[in-house]
Amino acid sequence: MNLETYKFAAESNQWWAIMPELMLGGLALALLVLEMILPKKDHRIIPVFSIIGQLAVLAGLIINYRTPFLGDETFSHLLKHTAEGQFMRVFFVVCSMLVTGLGILGLSRQTLPRVEFFHIVLVVTAAMMLLVQSNHFVMFFVSLETITVGFYILVSYIRSNPLSLEAGLKYLISGALSSAILLFGIVLLYGAAGKSQADSMQFGQLRAYLAGTPGDFVASIGVVFVLCGVAFKVGAVPFQIWIPDVYQGAPTPVTAFLAVASKAAGVSVLLLLVRGVFAPYSHIVLPVLVVMTAATILFGNVAALGQQNVKRLIGLSGISHAGYLMLGVIASLTIPAAVNAVYFYLFVYLLASFAVFGVMTHLAGTDDTDQQLDYYGDLAKENPLLAGVLAVGLGSLAGIPPLAGFIGKLFVFIAAYKAGLFWLLAIAIVGVVISIYYYFGWIKAAFFPVWQVPLAEGETDPRPPRKPVSRSLAVTLGALALASVALGFWQAPITEWLAALH
Image (tube, rainbow, N blue to C red; front, side, top):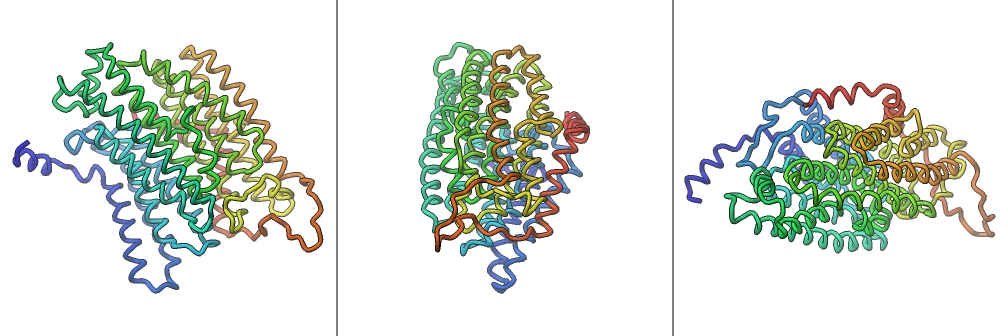
């Protein structure tokens, strides 16, 4: 390419198309500037400023959800602006706001730098928004690695805690391995398609090559390797082994970020690849996803049964939710309505998960990794609001009617039934039945006294002291719980919005 080509590419860049991401990046830099110019006693307003800025970005996205760039490819085909990508941009900003709020609460108990935490959350959020709009494997890989590097830091943020440092190291090693697998798959696809396509990393051109050569062995291996790299981000079997330790060691707000936003990004990318660039190789993609989905649902639910640490429990149960979402991804290959079912599931999963993580963050002590099931004993007696929010959140995750989680699972299961995935659907129903046991065990611990060995003389209660709930946290948790209940009865606000995006 000569200089004139580069000039033309630069002049054709439409920066308004990524204005939300640019605003988040600018906001992230503004936080660091405020940290330098404000007196230390005023640093507490910096995360509040971050939330206000994110609210402005969210309002802009909602007002302009039918962006004029919808359906266009920008930045020399690096990005493609789709209805699904627009929905996920809103999704990630909501996640970022909630993580920021939980971070204010969680970091208040730690003697750690705080502004950097909120800065990295914004950068990771912007990278996720770019990831789901990727239309080129270069953009795809760069944005994915930006997310991953940010999480390397966030997971091990409590550097005084050995379990947090261990979690960061395990995430680093497993994340590097998954990135290598993903990159090797991309290289194989580049090598297979490069001989006949001008830009074989661009999704449209790569799909054209795959459609014309359905039996290419090298391309088939490349497709499988890329799917395996994405499966790590989703937490699908056999790439799930990092989840329990990382979820336990990470600060609870970061665990929430991983459990909701990172998983949602992985599922969105899976939909993008399976229904887009890899669609001509569905004969390769489908068997791989079917085996992964069945194993993921069964492993996640069975492994969660004996857990006493609630962070490990929520991590293992999150693996099963990845399986249910992958069931919707498979169904979307033949039933287009399954796409909206997956996005509705993600939204109700966000509501329920952050309700639960909000309670966990409030009840956690200085040692954020030590959150045992029996620490929730008598919670309903001492704080009915927290117990009620926890019950609604866990009930929604379990899929208990009439909560929104039940409707989300129902939509995905109906799509799977229409797609003829009967034995996978049977496994998913068995998984739901198993999950009721451990979710209701947690609810039981909160609403009924848990028998404990009497403390010896001079021994202190291992449970963290319970503090009053702040007004802002009470309003946020109440809104999340009410939304989970309301969407169980009336899904139109979300379903109509999803339908309007198309």
